[in-house]
Amino acid sequence: MTTRVLAAEGGTTNFLLPNATIFVEAALFLIVLFVFYRFVVPPLSRALDERQEMLRKQVQDREKATRTLQEAKERYEGELAEARAEAARIRDAARADAARVRAELREQADREVERIQSEGAQQLAAAHEETTRRLREELGRLSTRLAERVIGEPVDDDRRSTVDRFLAEVEQAPAGGGGS
View 1 (tube, one colour):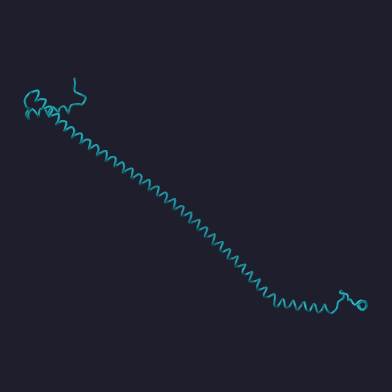
View 2 (view 1 turned 135 degrees about the horizontal axis):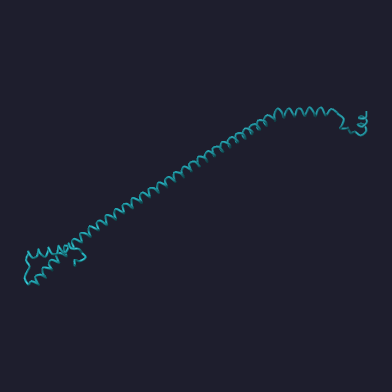
């Protein structure tokens, strides 16, 4: 009764009191909920699933790329270490070759020095013999001329052989002088 009285007097209704609009609103809410569940949720759900799948695939691709990068880095570092080792081997081989070549050149130079010294000694000996022979001849001629001047007549071949014998004895005598 109080509801009718209030409605008759002021024309306002109490919103706390239930009336038929609440049932209509509940029915409309259920219809909207059904429409959302039937037509909006499946595409959204599919879109979210696709997005989730795409994210999962991206994570897998990233992990695969990371593994590939790590493997490539390890291969690179391995090959770099191998290249450094090969360079060290080549450098050591080059040093060994350089030492071998240096030793060969030194040995060759020593042989050349020996050969030049030997040739020089041979040339010196030959020059000494030639000079000695020339000096003997010259000394023989001078001695023969001196003997001819002292004697006053020409010296024949017999006397010349005597002079040659004397010069040979002088040559064989010790160099320090033969005094008593």
